[in-house]
Length: 180
Image 1 (cartoon, helix red, strand yellow):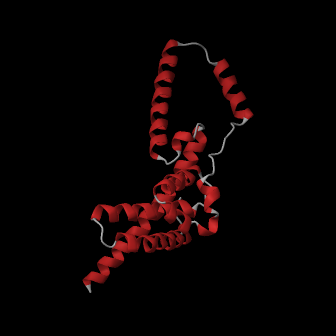
Image 2 (cartoon, helix red, strand yellow):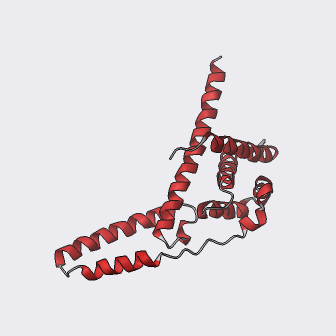
Image 3 (spheres, helix red, strand yellow):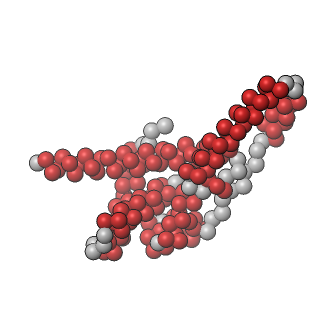
């Protein structure tokens, strides 16, 4: 799934707004402070694209609100910033049909030691990879449902692609301007 051009445009507008808010504050600061401001405004812009509909966007908004409440409120002005900052992560329930089906499959399996060993290794590997995802995706530590975690991860990846594409476009435009 590729990010749409409207997503890129909206991200760029939000990001520019965040940089304009920060500009008076970072004019006489170090490079590391400027990098932090750019990253913070890009994170808020990316999260505001989703308007708090995903767990990762709410987690980024909550994290950023603790670091710089003014920036978050300015960038989320049309989206009810207070409700997003204080919004809790959703409780997700598994479908009963899926649970019943998996229980039937487990009952059908014969107890075979070699199969059990392979299954245990596979479960351990899946759990390790799932924990890695939880550590990477903002708000992932609050997601107990693996399906939700994967959906949020995919959405987060698309948003990161949008962010990278916009930043690449800006760098390309700056390089083309300096060549003239």
